Length: 382
Length: 152
Image (cartoon, rainbow over all chains, first blue to last red; front, side, top):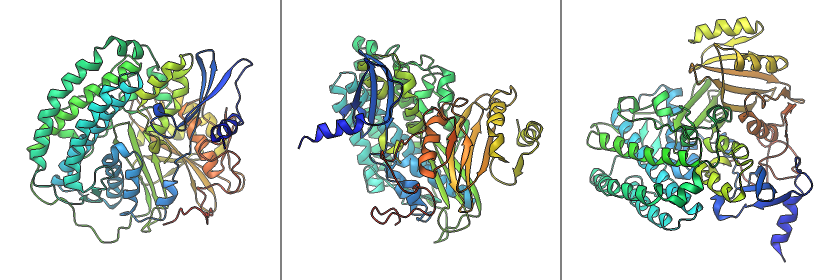
């Protein structure tokens, strides 16, 4: 059986409009290394020029929103770790914030600081892995292996405290699930000292590389107005000059007491988005340094009832994940489970701008454009 | 604009608007028939300039459906939630994808998950569900799937 040929025929029969005679329609994915997951793009080409990119989603859709309707307010948080698996902590954080908003629950200062520390470590790991994957997308293989070295160190720190490496499930309504591991501060200090040396080295290795710059500068341009209209957020939008960092605009936990900059570049191309993430890593390091020796003593979890019931109403919380603005919208009817829950995922909106960015570009550059968007498919297919 | 100023301005623009109490942001209930001209005013009015549509979703209330639009302005940072009540058997509302480009994708999701028809949408077809999907819309409350477990 030639499985491949069947798949091609199926995809080619998808309704499609906008193609002219002489155009070539090709499928990228759903199993293609450069799509970083099971993303399927139907691309219309004229020669080597991209005319249209049509994403076809749903290969790993798990219907999380529907699933969450039958889970309690404690249970549903764990499902969301599987959404954007590279920012699992931050997803959990957003859900916990939304439930706390409904319960009007005050989170103890120690838990707030632990949450922010974990978020920033996650952001570091995510951006750093992205750095390796993006460099690989445009042809540099070594960074991919280098990126995993530091990411493993962060995963080890997470494992000690949370018990797992990827889907941490550490945030609970009212605080965090367990106290920090006794070695946590020591390990983070060691890691930061190591990472600070390495990040300059990595900067030198890739940022100033002329081949890398040729592959990313002027590629995948999107203007500030278009980025807002497409609902783009996160580093991808900040590369176009959009001020959209939720940590600055709508501070949660202790972010308003911290010293850090919102990184904004105005290039609007892949290189600008790359620079935003590189600079953001340095900001994350600075945030961790400000907090690591100042973790207040006290409870790591507020006292909550065994069964949580949100009052009738609507609650919306938003946080800044490594990919952009994540929103959790809960409609409660006063029961122990949400009536309706909506995850506004950053990747979904960022992906919608892909067609606009790639139009008129060469097919070889499409990989760079997709890479710079930092798409995580489970985040799009929720 | 503060919540109260926004409320005055909206009721000037659309006298038929009904405001909901409570909630973090100003909630306004509108008739789906007036959504398109109202959306255009929200976007283009210089002192409102709602240019950022950050959450589009449908809700199944069993007796009716509703569309919820979360709007925000990147200039003034004020936020508005617009809700439109739709008929359960024939849910239809005008598409706003030419005003906010992000609506194009989000409306496609609401179309397949809730079966809401967006009038004058440029490209209304399935995005997440497999091609040739037959049967009920998965996010409706009466949807049951005996084969693939979706209830835990």
